[in-house]
Length: 290
Image 1 (spheres, rainbow, N blue to C red):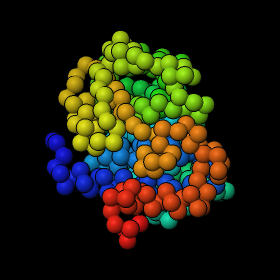
Image 2 (cartoon, helix red, strand yellow; image 1 turned 135 degrees about the horizontal axis):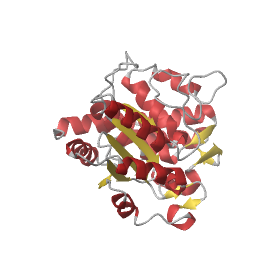
Image 3 (cartoon, one colour; image 1 turned 120 degrees about the vertical axis):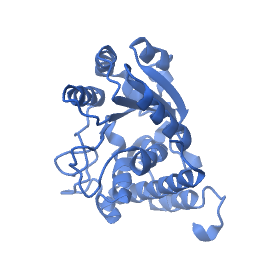
Image 4 (cartoon, rainbow, N blue to C red; image 1 turned 90 degrees about the horizontal axis):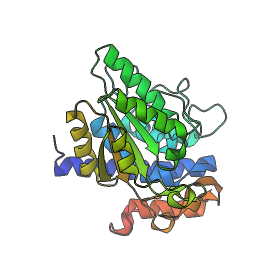
């Protein structure tokens, strides 16, 4: 069912809150990844507040959908979305990357209820999602599997082995999403290892492929609904996003992929300005809201 205007506004408000939390947790940690988490905030807000079948109070509910984060380094956006959804207190986000924290720089399934897999090595998430989706079909279960990947991650050979397996076995209960922000740690994706024509490559492996504006929650939700209606094929949603979305001075700049304070992560003064930009919607709201 299409989103109402009120539902769109509610998800967009959630996304702004998630972006604020991402900045706050990165500054507290002093290291991490900035661009990817910010650009995926709209999609994570849509997933946790509209798309996913889940229960924050019962993370192990058997009927839940499964969300696999293959590019685990953008996990601050997932922690922030989970906290805002009620899995744990938002204040716990400030323990990111701290010794003994449940919120490590890459997701660790055994530490935090609600995480489906541990991830770190790029390229492995789609294979994990394939196994889970295949098992659900063998068991006759209706659960859906979502796998989020980075575009730079498409350089990994394991991705294409999984893509072939999923297409060959027609796992229509699996929807993959690529964050097509065009950057990776060393530069622009098309300079490091050209990916295009990315959509045609997946179509050649028997996937149903959709392309959306990754910051338009209505387009994204419509694509997810279309994926549910497609039988005999898995669906790939290529979400075109702007790296660092929400903070104009870092958008499109691969140097903000991630790192340490001053080298990919904002220092406290920069963070203060970034939060003001996010809270004021880049000046569209009066200053008192910033």
